[in-house]
Structures are given as structure tokens and as C-alpha cells.
Image (cartoon, rainbow, N blue to C red; front, side, top):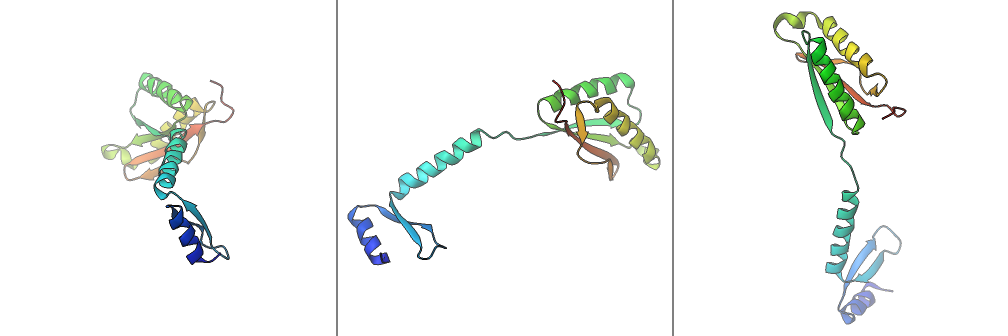
Length: 145
């Protein structure tokens, strides 16, 4: 059918002519109530967004002088974050002259990962960014709750 005929039919029905597939040969159009169509599309989009879950990245900050008890507390927090389905970014902050010993920071961050090894997988290896050494962890697929 020609475009003129399609427009005439749409006017007769007091509706709009919407192009559905412009790349097709010939182009595909549909006679619809445009306002109602847009309303339904936004409702479908809102409904699909409602079922999605955003993964948050929680941060755990450590230092070279962080005590064992404090690390235990931070480990439990990291486990709680991972079980909730979030990712955990572990940061070791170097203060003052500590920056001259990055191997100590790697040791701290690796020990922290070893404590979480049964519930966490490394997403990234430890890397330096300015005065901070960081690593990202996510929940293991085979981890038990």
C-alpha cells in the first residue's frame, strides 16, 4: 500500500501512522494511538527496570599499621557485603614514607584476600593508583552462605 493510502486510513480512524521498521523493503508502518503507545512503552520500561538489581561496589580501607582485630572486623564486613551480592574494593592507603615500601602493602592486601578466599574471587590483581593499592573482589560462584 502506498504512504498516501496508509495516511488516509489513519486519518479516517483518527489515529497515527507509526513507522515500525524503517530498514525493511518496503518500510513497515502501523496505525496506532501514539500517546497510548508511548505510555505503554514507558510502563514496560519501568517494569523491567524494577526487576533489575544494581551491583554496588563497597570499599574496605586498610593501612600498613591496621591491627589484627580491626582486620577481623573489616573481614566480617567484607563477607557480609559479598553475601549480599555486592563487590568489594579493598584499598591499602600509604601515609607519609610508607609509600617507599609498596611490597608491605601487597603483603597486607594478599593476607586479607587469603582470609576471604573461601567466599571471594579476585576480579583484579592489586594495582597502585597514586598513594593507594587496590584490588576488587566478587563473590565466588560456589560459595556457601
